[in-house]
Image (cartoon, rainbow, N blue to C red; front, side, top):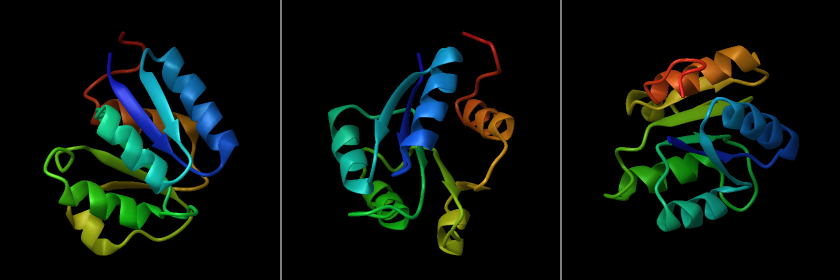
Length: 122
């Protein structure tokens, strides 16, 4: 079972995504800022990181740079969901971006594609 770590300081977004991804057969963990996410990833590396950019304590740009600097995590696929702008250097490093507000089907499709899965395949 693929594991996704969702990082966003908006509980409504986290809860909706976690519920729908759980229905897709994914194991979902959540964090509400970059520091919590890094701690969670040291405990168990997810198969995909989905993160917002604008968060308290540690923003998404810093989180992504920390992930890329860590040998154990640098291979991790990352999907950014944000109303903010993603640093072009991060896009060049293979990070995917989906702007908020997003269509839920589009978001789920991107996540499943990054995990190499199809909708409803468990």
